[in-house]
Figure 1 (cartoon, protein in one colour):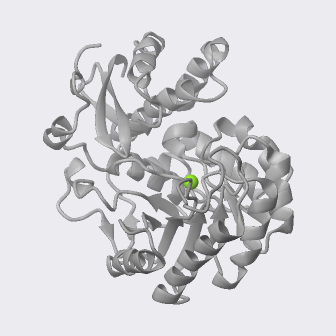
Figure 2: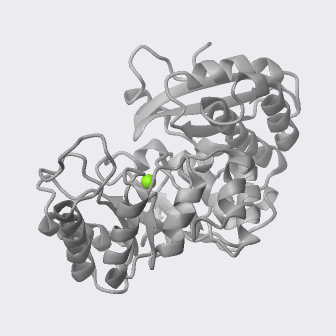
Length: 379
Ligand SMILES: [Mg+2]
């Protein structure tokens, strides 16, 4: 079996996802989804195609490594090059699974679990008050989710004296605590709750907030400080009574090395269709396991990329929970050809069918294409 062509499509969801489709001389194709690679991602995939043509798609990891090494001088340490490669890698797994008649989790080493628990990333509602946060939390819990996440960072807070510095004042902090308190009170103790700060605060502000949030039994506090300085993150973690989670802006194993070796977080959150794909995610999880750190993958993909993270999550012992971030977009499920909603009771059952298990619904994808682009048209 040989690869004959690679094509892409950009479909609107949480931003634009790049779908990568890899074709073979035996008529089989595989489809992957990557995200946050930006408008340049399809172009990068197109330039990588010559390294794939004529190769056996079942050599997933050697093909990944071949492209990664070839692009070392063109930005393959992090960023869009890695994300484009992740889209290719996921398409290769789908294709390899179909060629071998096996689900992707089987090719990744077998499954520890057949159901992947999701957490629903919620917004605080139009009013953005404690009450509207509580309302959103109850609505998500009513859909069956047993874990939720809310954002508390607010750069437009009326008490904010300066748009640029990262320091929280007492009024801003009080607003954050009130929102978290309202959500916890609304959903009770049996729903897990994560809070995201999007790396927008300085070390001391982050530590003060972490301490103020201690009574609410958080699943984690996310990116309390910007992600670039591991030592600052470690200082927050050292002083925080709540678990600290970070990693959605890091790439490849090497991007996580410092964070893990310094044990600067309690939980890592690599975004697999962004940071390097499924085998890379499993390797990162293995590094985390050395320090008894669980992995809760970040995920804003449509259903195909989410399924890819589910297959990896099934094959990773220290998997904790996977993000789902499409509450405001009703067409998530429609992007796949499925008989029933993929998410049931706040979880996804990992499909046993070959490859990722389901195909992209091209009619729906066509409707949400980036204007001026085509669905798997010639590059
Ligand atoms: Mg985040």
